[in-house]
Structure formats: C-alpha cells, structure tokens
Amino acid sequence: MIRAVSFLALLVALAGCRPSAADFNGTYLDPPMPAKDVTLAAPDGPVQLSDFAGDLVVLNFGYTSCPDVCPATLATLARAKQLLGEDGEDVQVIFVSVDPERDQPERAANYAAAFDSSFVGLSGEPEAIADAASAYGVFYEKADTAATTEAGYLVDHTATVFVLDREGRARLLWSFGTDADAMASDLRALTRSS
Amino acid sequence: MPMRSLVVLLAALALAACEPAPDAEPTEVPVTDLVVEDAWARPADTSGVDRSAAYFTLRNGTVEPVRLVSARTDVARVTEIHLSFEENGVMRMRPMVDGVEVAPGEVVAFEPGGYHIMLIDLQRPLVEGDQFPLTLTFDGADEQTVEAEVRSP
Image 1 (cartoon, rainbow over the protein chains, first blue to last red):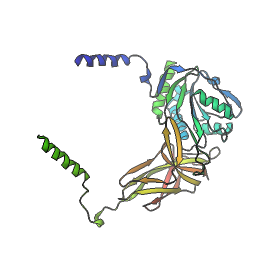
Image 2: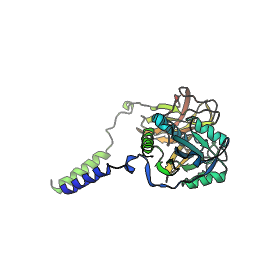
Image 3: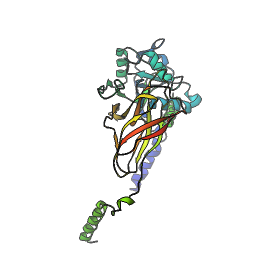
Image 4: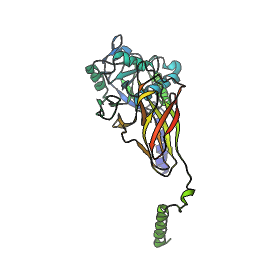
C-alpha cells in the first residue's frame, strides 16, 4: 500500500512538471485541430479567418436574436479580455452568426462590438456559414417553435468556444458557462506557450 | 447489535423520516411569501438588437406550489418565459408555455443559460445602471412588481 501511494505521489509530481492539458480550464487539444480557413462577410467586405493569423483567435458561434446564451458568452469574453489587460492585445474575439437570414454582416458586427469594441462579428451567405460551422463541427438549426413564441424562430446551436493558436489551429475548447477568470488564465497560458 | 434490533432501528428511522411534522393549528402556520430577489437584466443597445433577458430568483416560502405564468414590463413589447438548456453540447432555447412551477420551500433561479424572461422588441435601450419595473404574475400567489437593475452579470 505504502509503495502504491508513493508511486502515485511520484506520478502526480511528474505530471506537474511539464505543461499539459491539466494547465488549462478548457479542453486542451493536443495535437491541435488542423487550421481550417473559411471566408465570411464583414460590413466592408469578405474576411478570411486566416487574415487573423498571428493572433490568438477566440471563435464563437451564435445569433444576434439570442437573448440569453450568446450575450452571456460574449459578455464573459469581454470580461476575460479586460482581465488580460495588455496581455490581451493579440487576442481577437470573433463572433460568427449562424442566422444568416436575419443577421446581415452589419448587424453581426454591431452586435459583437457592443460587448467590446475590438470584437469582430461576421456573417455571410448561408453556404459560407455552413462551411464555417462544419469546419469546427458546430451544429445549428432553426428550432420548430414558431407556434409558441413571438421571438420569430429560435436557433439551436453549439455553444462551445474555440481558441485558435497563432497558426489558426484550434487548441482549446471552452464549454458554455466557463467563467472569465478561467478564460483569462487559459489565454495567458496560451500566450506564454506560443 | 443483534440483527433484529438493527432492523427495528432502521424501520423506526424510515418511519420517522416519513412522518409528517406534528399538526399545527392552521392559523399558526407561519404566513410567508413568495419572494422575488435580485432582479436584473442584461444591457441592450436597441440600435442593433431589439431584445434582452431578465433574471431573478424565486423563493417560495408558502406551503403551496406557486407557478410563474407571465411577466410584463413597459421596456419590452413582448415578454416570454424561456429556458435555455444544453443537450449534447448544443444550446437550445424553448418557450415555457405553461410557466415555471416553484414547489413549497423551493428556490428557482432564473439565470444565464437557464430560465429567463425573454424581452422582445425593446421599447428603449437598456443602459447599465438603469432600473425598470418588471411585473410577474403567478398562479398561487399575488402578482408582484420588482425593480430590475440593468447590469452585466
């Protein structure tokens, strides 16, 4: 028993010596997801995700008519960016609409910028949105609730937030509800390691 | 301890757990209320987005179930009770057309990613620091109007 405990203690000690998934609050992807470039629309023209190479991109999907989950995520991201201060200068938050029918590029851009003026909001043609979503395994579909809500249609969607490294590869996933301190700590760790 | 005593003890414990509290005179039942606490709503700038959400905590201090059936406020043309929930990594949101029940003695929190009052077609921007009256209507309790504070959580 003593020997088993000592061995366990040694394992724990060793694991603490090198950076690993345990250093992150989110799910650390090792190896990272290969970079996937997609072209979306900003108010003044097309934007490619690869345009942001060199930044740590924090990518999240949602829709501007969403009153609860999407603003919760964006407000948390805004707070995380504040917490980072100067360390957050090369962190770029990008919101991608999964509701191209209602979210014109301008609406998506204004929506994201309302949380933090540095945030980029993108939309695009339905096919482009579908490409972007499938590149990250993001699911979205209109919910069949028209008969019971005056909110127009609601959109069910993956609420996972993706952090891309400076080469555009997804490195880290945050599930809905991750708090700003956890995000800031993860972004600091990623900033240091890249 | 002999097995039989143990069984008897366990049975006694089980019975004790089921036994209702000694009957009080109905007039002596403490009259407590349904309390609505910490009402707030997320800021929204109506130039881009015409909706927001309001949150609060319902504490049912009565001895009967209470059901929140509707909400209204002059800052939104329409209000609906909604629930956001996660299913296989996908966030979904659904109207709670039958309202939300709070059992006697229970607390139900309306909070981001869960129950909320969806404010649709905002009549004015919700600016951080503002307050607005929010009226909640219940089955099993009187209507209540609370001041909701506009703030980021």
